[in-house]
Image (cartoon, rainbow, N blue to C red; front, side, top):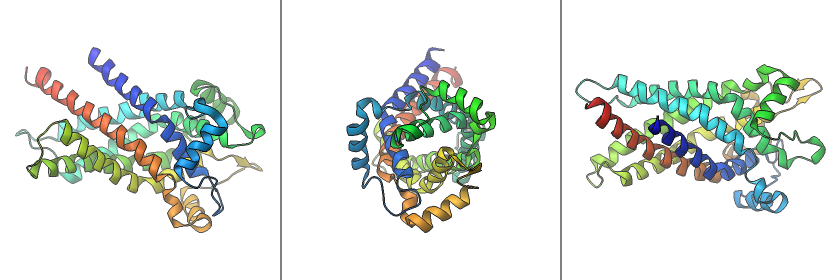
Amino acid sequence: KSTCFHVFSVMMGATVFVQPLDLVKNRMQLSGQGTKAREYKTSFHALFSILRNEGVRGIYTGLSAGLLRQATYTTTRLGIYTILFEKMTSSDGRPPNFFLKALIGMTAGAIGAFVGTPAEVALIRMTADGRLPVDQRRGYKNVFNALFRITKEEGVTTLWRGCIPTMARAVVVNAAQLASYSQSKQALLDSGYFRDDILCHFCASMISGLVTTAASMPVDIVKTRIQNMKMIDGKPEYKNGLEVLVRVVGKEGFFSLWKGFTPYYARLGPHTVLTFIFLEQMNRLYKTYVLDV
């Protein structure tokens, strides 16, 4: 019980650390919607604008939703990944190959994303609120108020709006993050310059974060736009994820699919490092005190 509590505590702490980056990333993805003119020139411009207009408290808008997402999505995917990884490891201790790692990662990510979608919807809407005129803001007080009001005002199915792109993003993120981490770690160890220690885990995590950012951002912007959209004359702004991609590329330019790259990587990098270093320590303790007993 104590070990589970410490895992949970570290994940919550990581979320508090990266929440401002998450907010900047979401604002960047929503800026200049439908036009080549951007609301924010750079991520730093976005950060300083938010600080100037909304204060320090403003950059932590949506923290409660971020924590709930962590408690649902991340714990589910890591738990399932670890269990499947152990099941797929051969009796002589040889780990799964690259393709099996990717498959395990995608399965764990998709299940975790489905569980975490309601918190994700609340997070996107809460972080986007500050950029709107006062009379257009949703004004959710916290994640539970957001979930309650979404259910009451728009129906319970709205909590899973954007579920498919959320799951698709999770599949891409987990296939890239978990598999590239394992491959990067193995490559570093095979180079002879690294031992299986925290330095190796740190370097492998940073490489994994870069690969994951580049691969997942186009899917992430689809998820963000769909979960933040409003109904216009009874019709949704976007029919599906493909329409989001076509409109973003057509009206905002191809590289707009990577809007918010800097805060996304800055968010994913340390988060990946903290997550994998702690997971490695947990695996080591598990093998020492459970499997070897």
